[in-house]
Length: 361
Ligand SMILES: NC(=O)c1ccc[n+]([C@@H]2O[C@H](COP(=O)([O-])OP(=O)(O)OC[C@H]3O[C@@H](n4cnc5c(N)ncnc54)[C@H](O)[C@@H]3O)[C@@H](O)[C@H]2O)c1
Image 1 (tube, rainbow, N blue to C red):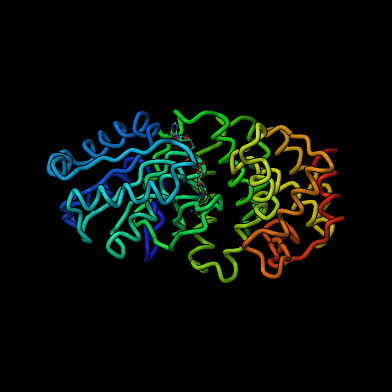
Image 2 (cartoon, protein in one colour; image 1 turned 60 degrees about the horizontal axis):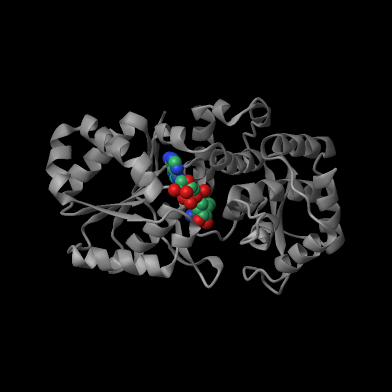
């Protein structure tokens, strides 16, 4: 797999990736290195990570042994908060970390968001490396410099832009990820394919199960995200394309949070993609049959959930009060065609209700 090299960061893959990481560690001569995990990635991924460093360069692996520190947090979104950040900052101070030291985030999006935030704020920013262990982490969360935590029930409301120097993608980590988690990450891959100029929708249709996702397709998905954030890292313009499916998806995610119907982020985004593809048909002339094809493919992998009329009006209410809106007006990214997103599109309630009907039929 070819590495992706940019000024701010490199994305490297598998064994070659470990060689690059070891070189990076050697060249920077860090005094201390903290590996941040959650308890699942500590159990499933840490040994693989450490033994791969050793295979890549036994000498460096030996040399850094005395410099390594470990910190593990409870798995789940609940750990992505200010209290956990404070605990990790305290740990870094107690262990004598300095500005020249390194943090390695080994985990899914929760860990790379949290660790990236802690590293970017500790002593005004220390270097960090992301080693994503979920599909969502690989194609989305670990790339692009958005780091942050949830605060007062608002997701990602506190954060900074900070780029991992290296993102190391090791596909072996996907083998211990459960099917539901993998499918959730697949939603962001579908999104990337829909907004990408080199749209490869026909390849998506060949994906029959989560075991069938070719690594090449994951690599391509990463390239799509990088090509966008490279041009617009701070989301002033085309980075908004990446919000396709997210306007309604976020509202659905928030609405179901804490209920027995709670969804993973990617599952809510998959529903958002169906609804926003239908809105694209209504507002910008996106092909209806194609919208239907996309819906069928998503239903096949994600199934479908019921929304009552009162669910729908609550979700529309949430959309209007989303703190990210200007003037209480939710703005959508819609598709004119595959690979042709349009930003800042307004829709009315009736159209959203119609989109829910399309989702259900
Ligand atoms: N920064 C960004 O640009 C960006 C983009 C999208 C999402 N996100 C954030 O990412 C987070 C969601 O990421 P996620 O879906 O990776 O969730 P996650 O990190 O919570 O991981 C999901 C679950 O899988 C477990 N897990 C992780 N890797 C594993 C492995 N290899 N084997 C077995 N279990 C494993 C975790 O312990 C956890 O229980 C959210 O906080 C979201 O806000 C950030």
